[in-house]
Length: 318
Image (tube, rainbow, N blue to C red):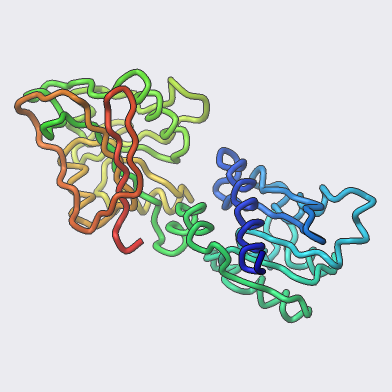
């Protein structure tokens, strides 16, 4: 096995570990770390919860006492650049240097303004051999919301809708349940992974959607209604106002569920990072037309459940 193949093998394990922090690591990124010596993993960890130990800390803590002498000869694999600043926890770069690890392999550079290459630079200045960019696309995709938030100064935006086979969002203006019980549960699972959820005024008044997590475990996202004439708890602002509010509140992800005008407005403004379109095996013969898929969109995944087809699109540039 070549060095490249070896590095990719252990970086995949880092990504597997990192995903365990999906529910509790945010707003911090999901990160996994693996310590390898002589072709054997002697330690591994991931960032479990915001405010607690980072992946590198947990990785070193997992090393058995009898393996401690091996640490200076080991290679540390980590899916994201080690931090170099004091936040809620001390810098991981300093810990790595103290442990005397001779080589570090990073999946990608941290876009957070207080890091952005400083961790790698500190390690190299300490004489540690550092390799950056192993499985970089996969490591960036792992934290696409964190990267979007820090590089574009707005939340990651998912536009989601369900439609008929002939391309309508309803049945001649009447609400229609295109999802099956199972695909509806998948939507609630998705909601549990987002910080905020938004619909337009018409959808809110016509369907009175709960926009919560009833069919899955986890927290419900912040409920928002896009309307310039809304009253009470409804969101009285433009799309840019919504995004500015979420950025200020450090909420990294927004799920937009409709209706047609709201979804199309986001598409026309180029404010989307992912589209999720569920198509049911029924035709209504008329109704509100579903939004148009942008020419810049490319298919990332396709799945079928209960006769429904769910296609996920991302911008072609990605």
